Image (cartoon, rainbow over all chains, first blue to last red):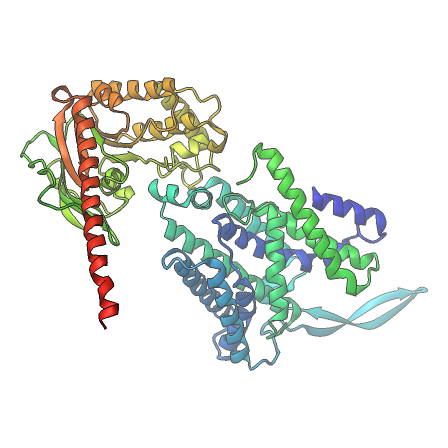
Length: 330
Length: 288
């Protein structure tokens, strides 16, 4: 509802908001957040949180680059980089569910550790993303001008199939985001995995007494969250064609992903949330940032307005949710 | 804890072939606290066994060990004469033992029918998607069969009353096709009418004779109404094991009261000793 209100507001107040060109500029804002938010929802419904997604987002492309330059090939390098993320997710889940360390502390530690490791491995130097470079070819195109046939050379940009699939294509990330969100929403609503995720977040002891394997589900959800973060990190590296070893971007996107999940109605206390909601939350953040830029809001005010909007949206959601469920949350 | 010499003798494990479940010399400690010292218990086929004992006597711990939720530190269990060592709740359930826990193990955010089928979900093929329609109709049938009125089974259990929640937890276990059912205070939080419904259900299950039941109860009157035999746990041991026809509310009450008096005298004696000792040590600083 808040998202629709924001979209309507900007559609009325700016002339270019409802154009396909603008939709394309909106995509890079919201598609990565939707995917990261989807993973975060699975962890947050458990009543946990994963802060290490920022580190996976930064670490995966660096591992990918190192493996590719070692001659492993593009696709195997991506798969291995994502396998590293899976391992980190499993460690997160094991710390939380087996050792009983708070997920906030565990994943905060992992966030710093793997952002640090990223800087060490990359020596803090940006590099060009393998397989993402644009090749230009020149072809001769016939034009008819005033009855004369003129041949002019035109430059055409090409990107490889790998880059087109892994985030380089205009709609690549959108397609991934929609596919992942639909798949995970189905998993959450219509499978035992989803049912147990809600059960653990709602009543961990009760779920264990009923025979739900709490440790297994917890580890699996942290693995999912880390895997998606590594995937999005790779997409963004391919799309921007550079791998930037700078933690500030990942730290911001980490917090925005959590904001997207919460705006989408996922409770930090666990037991309730939807993947589609996180997508809508991500869309809201994208629309807000994009709309404010189109309205000509001074760049210095952007974060300020985003912050206010997040607080308003989250508060509205809490009250709407409470009214809908017919009892105080607690 | 209790002086072993003064504790009542544990009921001797008599060898009986009709026992579906035997528990021998079970002990369990939680850090410095001894929950169970040496418990011997047996359950006959088709029998309803009432488990009594004051708060903290170890009743719930014993139930949790039999149900596979916790492991005993020592002792052995036998199910239908075979050694029984449940590795998990799922394992115990697979072997035919299911439990209604004191805290009910209900999931507030899930619907009535999802709660009733938790860990026994009906799933479609080939994609493992939940078959909600089948679970709904089966849950409805099971609740109707028990005679418990839940108006809507697709609402979250958070919206139901305490008695309705209890009824769902009991119905879930009864519906599980287990042959041994453990009920940890099934009548807590229930109104008189709902409580009577549950006791009726227990009586009906007993009549059918397929299941054996261990039931923890606090209300002695209900014990005599519903149970064939009563076991009383005191300080982690079985202090009394009699058929309900051979004992009375009075006898059970006296055991509890005597135990309370004895413990208080012991405590008093210990305090006196402690005071004397303290008096003795007071001299030490002045002497040094």
